[in-house]
Amino acid sequence: MDLDEIVRRHMCAVYEDIWEHFDVKRPRPWEEVVDFVDRCEGRTAVDIGSGNGRNAVVLADRGFDVVAVDRCVPLLRSTLSRERSGDGTLHLVQGDMVSLPLADSTFDVAIMVAGIHHFPTEEGRLRCLEEMRRVMAPGARGQVTSWGLHQERVPWEEMRTSIETEWGPVSLDDPRDRFVPWKEGGRVRWRYYHFFTERELRELSERVFGAARAFTSGDNVFVEVAREDGDLK
Image (tube, rainbow, N blue to C red; front, side):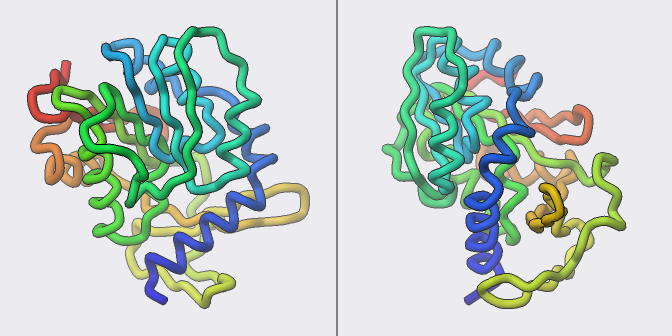
């Protein structure tokens, strides 16, 4: 089993374990995502790697017909507990970010919030972006977010570069890769992250979309992209 598969299986198991605590600790949508959604038009939207649905609900509340996709079923189902205030629809789909069970050229808006940084290889991260582009309609707009290498939220000395998983040991060589502790009571679970610079996320996105607008906000980096003739304003 290669590094990519071990880490992805490990991460799925971690989120299946911590989903209730995660749902409590991460209740609010990202302000930058709300701002992006408020600048988008169309009818259909997809939240790729939707987690507990805190951002998917924003799309639905703005009137979009939304598909929320995540691999972790318990976390995906927690979306149903979110308060709703809009007239859009919200559909839950279990699926993998690198192989979305969705049709080509379907969505007017796509978001991928804090998901791409959980993939341990560039190939996997590119595949996420390629799948995002595939399901976007011509002219559609998208936003991708990641934790930034500049972050100060978690001290680097608290992170690890190697752990034991159910599927074997993992040691990380890239200085931008770390296992970050998720603490609940007296327990610690280790979540894998690739910490992006703004330039790296922009250049990776440009390889798939041709153009990308990148910016940094707080501890995170963002890119906005468009499918073909989309507007990056």
